[in-house]
Length: 194
Image 1 (spheres, rainbow, N blue to C red):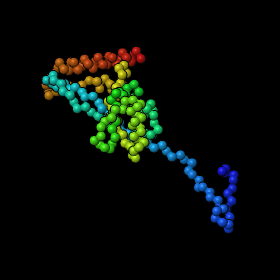
Image 2: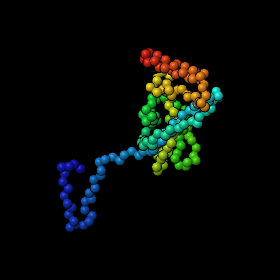
Image 3: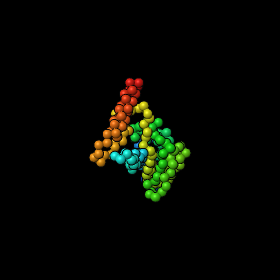
Image 4: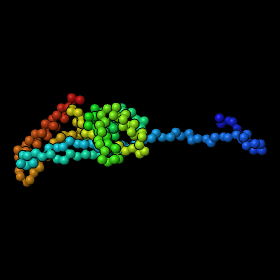
């Protein structure tokens, strides 16, 4: 039906079979794609901390949550990876795919399942479509920046601080200072080369 056509009122004096049924107009806005909620958990490697008596101990590994994000169920594997890299502000090559694992919010005691390729992603999406309110947690190793690309704070992130019990540990301070100097030199040489 076009806009220039006029609908005449039906003649209600005759039998009811002859009454024309006019469908009600539907909304022109398409229904938005269904989504699922995604929470990203980044696992950072444990750090070795040196104590004043030259022993090392492992600090508890830290984790960081990002999200939740609403992701369309029509998302493909490549688009999904692109969304993750955009949300984490990293490059595709920085992601550690072998560490990707997924977990459903319910049941909380459910297993962590691998999510490392397009096949496992397809199985995840099949289950997402069957759930009423899907909520997925993906845990992964924190993105690894490739060598040669330094950020302003990367020099200080790579150096462990020695713990001190009030003693003057000059040897440790010299080694610590040399490490910082080597990292600064590496950054300045990389900056001049690039």
